[in-house]
Image (cartoon, rainbow, N blue to C red; front, side, top):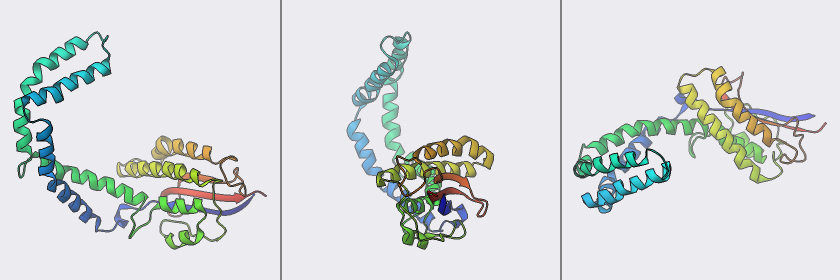
Length: 261
């Protein structure tokens, strides 16, 4: 076995994200609040009065319960009876509260403000793993270039703070067919996203390894086989593995390419 390269691409820390991402959150809130009148108009069109409420919400909801539980469920009739006697009374309250919710300072705007924080937190996870088109490039697009064997493009994106330097120009396409790149990258993207969420939630490395990483590495290892790996490479010595790098101290993805001895 002759190892061509072994490289690790690390996730970004939250403090490394550009400060401008707060502007994205503001734009998100402005966009949603700007659509309030359109959303309300659509709701009013679908449910304009109590009769619509009963047919759209009550009747369809009852049908959904029947489909979910099955017509032979022993408690179905009791469940439907409870819904039939209680829900129509809520029609007037629904219509009144719905329209009030879309007034200035109402529940809709309050809900958007609250959801904006969750939106920003999820956005930060994406940026730490994937990056954006302008200022930062995460581990996932670098992995894509490595698996495609695009050495020159990859070399320009390496950041020594979180990645290993590429010391060779002999990168080969990892897989025998380009169609295998996407599922491998998708697995890594999914895993690293969970890793970031876990880090932010205070889980330690052992927990992350046991509860997240091990399962995904099993799936990735199954893709590194003689039927899928480039025939110029040795599948027994190649790897795509989620791990924490001892040099950078970051979780990320390691790629190893090696040719047969």
